[in-house]
Image (cartoon, rainbow, N blue to C red):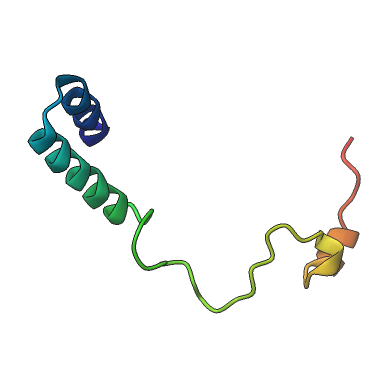
Length: 69
């Protein structure tokens, strides 16, 4: 967040050199957090997001769930 704050300060001050430095710091932080750069979670498994459970390999598990309450 310090880098993002530095971006705002540089923009308000109109300091293009500081803005460039701050944006590089934001980019470095995002890369370190895994938000940019090569994906780290790709294990070759199919992406089942946005699929109904009954249409995935988890169908049996889903069908055996009991109703809450």
